[in-house]
Length: 282
Image 1 (spheres, rainbow, N blue to C red):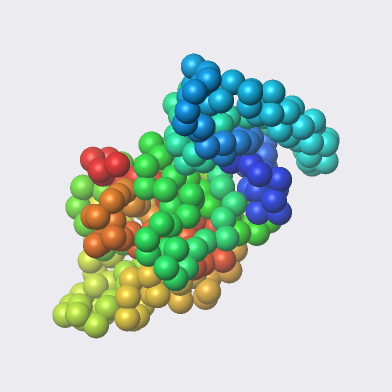
Image 2: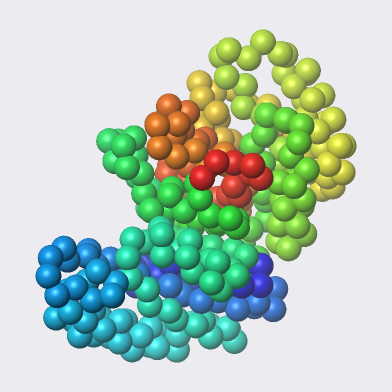
């Protein structure tokens, strides 16, 4: 967590994300870049510049960027601690700009403020946060409120105890070491699950042993869906972050299968760390 990217729009949620990212950078010896995206739609017609925008809009596009930079300088001065985030202005669609800047800056973490989405927007479009979670090649932490590194004392790991998750668990163990947190390995037992709670607990203990977990506990909770089980359990664990892998489904596959991780991000008040699993489709 040395090169942290924070999508930034001057909202309260973005300020929460920036503050948390700065605190992480201070603890890791890293740096933070805030990304402000001008969502300017191309103009189709004559007199286009080399980027497909009307030539007469160049000055108009430059002014918002300069105004944002001046405004961010005031934000920078208000931040506590020694971290002084960089500031970058891009144009285009937000999630595409984020992915581009991740590669250009070699960011290893994205921290985003989100209010989630629900209803028809969640089903058909989803939020920019969801799109980043599905496609980002690095971990993404979503926050809904102000946080500090010291406020994260527990990490909840919802799992089906699948094999082949060595890379994900290495990432989560590094996350645990950074925060000095206790792990809570969680299995959500839905109505179609036939195994007993005892059998599921034994599976979780074996899973923990395979991945050589320390300072952990295992839990089985009952719920109609995996998402509801994670949300219910997280309310019982104070000062927590939820850590989940995501398969990164997009298009029609996403509409059919969705993602438990994205649903949790949309409906929890806790911080959520997500990581697109190796081999996931984007």
